[in-house]
Length: 296
Image 1 (cartoon, rainbow, N blue to C red):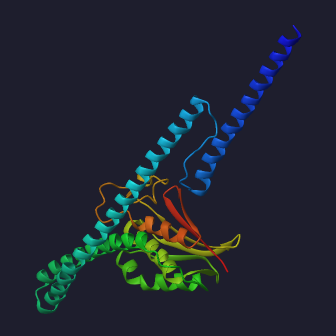
Image 2: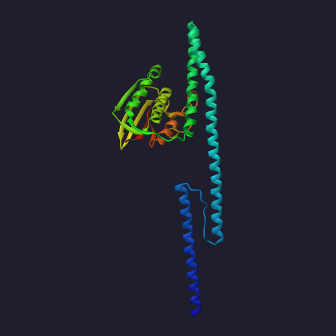
Image 3: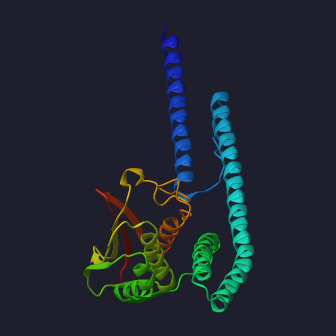
């Protein structure tokens, strides 16, 4: 009886030790998976267990991870091919479009009849719209492929915003839009100036395309961030999915043909590159975009 008890105790200790070891290995597998998620490593999951079930589990996990990695690489290749295709198509379209614009300008100078000039004006309007669409495609593809380093500098966001608005006055007047300045203090940022200007220009372009009334622009600062706010009324607020506004190729109105849906996507990419962010809010029929950029 004594030996039986001793044997049972030894078996119990062995089982307990095995369960502890099994639990430690499960924790090890969990830590390895967490590490892959946190630092983006591509290491395989390994286990020191001799238990066939645990070995199969680790092998199955590794197979799943390998399949996910293959899919990720395939998506990256397809995304690169997509960007290259857009860039090539945009580049190929720019050359003949430039020739068309040149001939349109020539016709404007040589034609004298009002009816002919009106037709030329319509042609020029549509060629300009086509040029804007092509530039958006080209800018987007170049932006995603741009590996150049940022050139951060301290400058006044308020002044850059005012200059961009002044440059857009002819287009704003043509659309019958008025810009109202909200809070417009002298606010500085520490960012790449060229990319910041592109953010402002794209927000203005968005207003030119879709604003249903006057635009309100503010430049403020909050929590160590410079804040640029652009607000305007929209025609059909019910058609706008606020959660998808910054998605590539999203347009609130599927019948619109003058927008690629890339302008706001470009704004988001640029803001994130500069260490900031952009958000949108729809209140009634007023759509407000808020860009936050780091201050010095």
